[in-house]
Image (tube, rainbow, N blue to C red):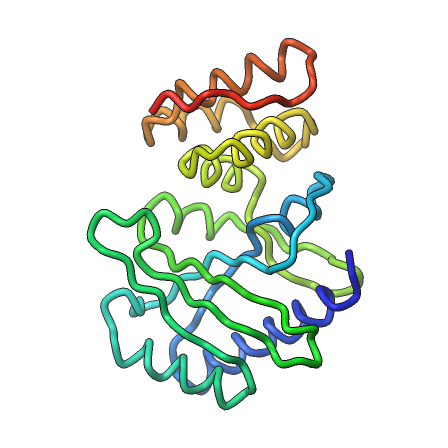
Length: 208
């Protein structure tokens, strides 16, 4: 992992810890996206940092919290804006940040929890050691569910790579139960079959 990512992760952890205290709103977050895959041994080129976050109240319904969080981040030198989606948008709320130039102008996307299963996945996040920095990352099963739901070609390749890694943390039985509940079982079975065939990960068609 490039040094700027390590420094940025340390800064982001500090920012959210401080924001939680100043705004009196505990914010929990976990690494997702390409960097999360890298921590689980799946090489993935990426130029940004992605998190899943949650708080009570949620900025989904609390405009004052959105404004206060934006103001805090901008005071800390981060260019910040909220992306609000419509009722049918798969990502109804996203906080996008540009870190100061001293962090190589890295971009940060923070997806706010909007479904119960995402909140459950966030609670199962795992403390990771990333080049000496302690940061929470989403459990591999949570990553798989997020990518199955996204359903893009690269997402499904990532699912196969995670399944192929044979991580001791992945319970196929538990994963199948969760995928069935989320109506993602067909595409999970397709990915499992592809991995079981012994071939290299290749795009599997999303049957949703």
